[in-house]
Image 1 (spheres, rainbow, N blue to C red):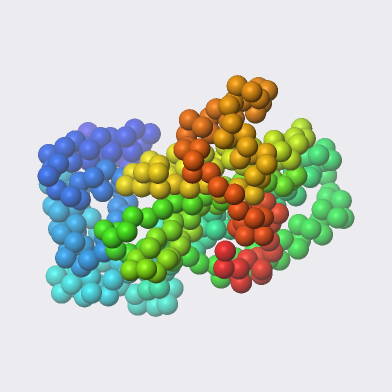
Image 2: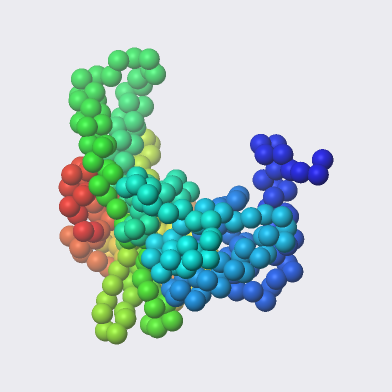
Length: 329
């Protein structure tokens, strides 16, 4: 065969291998490392200036065209870039109707006129955790899959279901911030636990010309296990999730060093005491988790915050979608 058939099991691997082989010939181009992050045949990239966008477009198109691949259906949130594409007869997606203002990007809905994202599960964690708790409740009652739901569970489920359509009103600005060459950004991770769930939420914090701005990154939530743990141990689990999330974010944003990742917990007398202490003093459950936290994070960057100012507090209890739409946390 002289073509790679679409749909064959090995096709994605062959495509990725072909592209990576081609990219090795262009280590001097700035767009090359961006193309290494291709998701199958989708290219996502963000730049701050129009000249840089033009450069990336030209270089990326050239590299792939030499391999017999043609980038098509470009989409941008920049009106200037749209005009440049139109003048140069580039194959891009113009907006003819209101429905074409939004595009699906890796499962997210991107409104490229407003440059905002919708349907991000991370944003909706405060809403979806309620359904997770409801499912766990059915497990605790040992309900069978074809068994009618008890009235209380059915009522709760129907109430949650009635709110689903409102989720489309929630949106998040796509850019985290601009002017990345100025003051370096920080990552702040807040964690919390309740008897029902534990988790954390991460934000960027940036100072530009004396103005402080913050941006939501991601939220993680886990249900408390059916085998009951003390609240103190659940609070330690929340810290462990924070440490693992920090490790992931540092790989995702390598320009942010560990010294610029800060952790916040409202469990000062227990969790923070464990993290800052000698792990060998604790029993196995605590010792193993404290060890991993200390290995993945800088213990000097763990801080205390009051429960009322901890945004992760809402994460572990859940919110109605109507409250979440109005919430600014």
